[in-house]
Length: 76
Image (cartoon, rainbow, N blue to C red):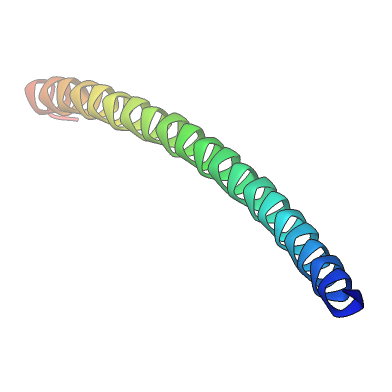
């Protein structure tokens, strides 16, 4: 009977330890998912900034083309 009781206590302890480990793992998974979401948001924001920069660069290129055209016409 004592051996059965010891085994029951040992099993209970192992079960509690497994439960604690599972909860810690779940917490880490949640933190990882949140980190990935933050990274995704940052990548999307950076992508938008790069696209805006590309658009502005094109606009600058158009202005430079106009300036070159005027310079050629006036022999500057």
